[in-house]
Length: 280
Image (tube, rainbow, N blue to C red; front, side, top):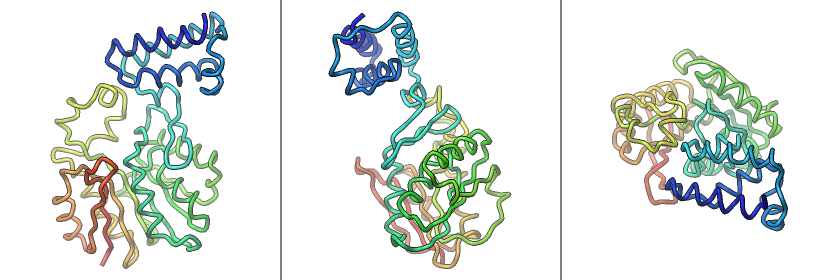
């Protein structure tokens, strides 16, 4: 069967299941199945795939038909300026989370030596991206998931920053360390009773622990802010990703925990997505 026919059949199946990224998904999954670059496939559409390759390809298409996220099927996701290995044990990195990296880099002069903490590191994409841009900085990444820490360590090794990054598999309440210049976090912030209304790709596949923000969505946010107040140096900064509807509650919690100079940043869609504050 020719590449062009495989792509046509797969795209039709995905479109019929209301997957609006049918074309790009088909191309990426065929690329993965054939172990070829997507560009090579598009330049050789009349080439013929083997029966085994066809079987592998449609197995992946069936996973996508069941709404499994493309990042989990491919086992990777682009974030900031590089590519990260991804498993079902961690939240899939999203473009809006890159705002944390962008704002962190604005706070860190290129040749400065800063100590950075990433709370709930997941795949490690945030702290690793920062360290790749700031060669003299060091960091600590913590997560309550053993599998997440294992994956973040792997990604750090692949990106050659493992020697500047320490990993801790524990709850932030049990973390006691030296003071940090900067703390970053993308904590769970979905109200738990709303999780069932999320897209199938999210609610059926991404880790519940990485989504559940408690009854009001701020349970983990409050914990992160409280502990950050204790772990930051004086005039140290905290950068959080939040839901646009949590701005006022998050600001209130920050003010009650010795933070000031609170700044809200919008994402590319114009939604308030990131909050930055300085410890008094």
